[in-house]
Image (cartoon, rainbow over all chains, first blue to last red):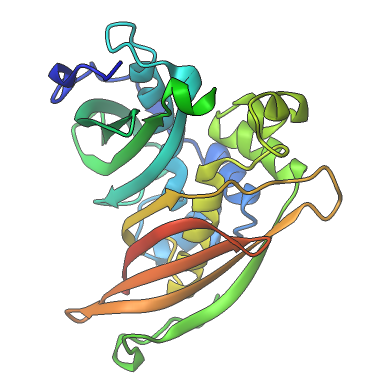
Length: 151
Length: 142
């Protein structure tokens, strides 16, 4: 059953604030073996012009993916999340996230379309500090494969 | 600190050096913890097989993160990305071996804008398959 296109433009309430920590930034950078000092050393970050250690570019996924999944599980939307795969991901940056940022995500349903029985939904996640400074916008395309396909 | 590229020396069509990244089961466990994405297909072979996958697969966003590392390392500035997007085309299959699998990344300059903006197209493969497509970024060289 195709998704209700009436959900296009729907804005979900801001997520609970998430505080970006130096420890979490270092943990995230460690996974991809990125030893850039700007992720760990405040002095190095200051030398590059940042007020504190900054987060790797895809760090925002910690908050945006969870926010997107909350929408996917919205029973009113009626998406069968067991058939959902992550199709595309894009981040547009105003500035890197950094230690000390207290951030929330506001998710907007950007588009919904059906193609060959697959439902495709694009969720925009605006990541901003609780003071209202915008940092990153995430665009997540989720694809719910048609039930016929997976049979 | 890597040597930073000089904008005036760059040309459209120029290839950036290839880089290989090893991804093992340990990488996936660590990424799950770091990102909070605990989807079972990224750590349980049993669950992965149940949903028709050949084995445990890497988080798409982990592969994307490797691309980000590749780009920021080339730029010499971890805050250099202004826009970065990818399409997850094929899964990165990660066997339960010490060697895991390898993700190979190369880049090519698509466009130069103003006096500092570089559009880069990434080619990201694993086991000879393109795992990301339309992997493109705008990098701001400071």
